[in-house]
Image (cartoon, rainbow, N blue to C red; front, side):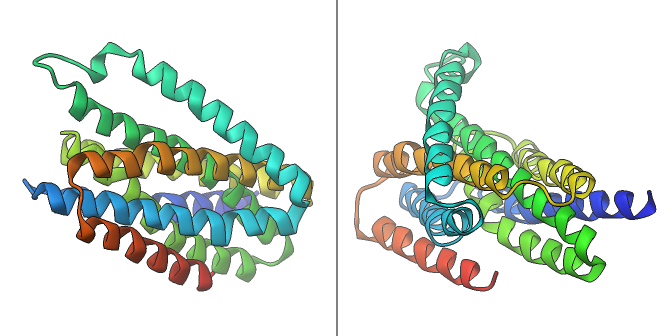
Length: 249
């Protein structure tokens, strides 16, 4: 029981600390220029593209095969479209005084938070399963995942702050997105040798959700803010940074 509680606590801490550190970006955003905001959104998009394409999906293919992973990707896209429609119809995002355009950025951050939470659950499964094999392996994997979650917290908090959400709300939203890591660690520890196909499906699901959000939310919103070479370079730098993060895993 003590080992179970420890693995669950470590998994939860890994998710919360990782996305929480990324969410701290919200505290430094104070009336920045449109070009800077556009560059930041593009950088976040580049991070997400790299993490999905060079880490998340290859891992899904390796664990459960191409077919299961692609089914997960397609399901992720469909579910996040449904979430998008539900959030868009929620009147509070459009509020008063014609703040619809700013509310769209908050919606983007929330959608990305959903995708990150979906991604964190299978990461927690890996942590819990790791603890059943060897305690040191589970701890090491938790540290790697915490580091890996930092850029995801940045990508989530940035559009929320641009849309006018308060610093603490954006930060706490990023922290909450890390909680499913602990839930996944609990499930992974209890089930031990959980089916690789299920993990692959979950990873593919999260990958599809995050690709949809990046391509249909982050990049278009960035272009709406500012069109120029600097934001484009931000996208490239985000991809490079994401590749570096993935290579350290």
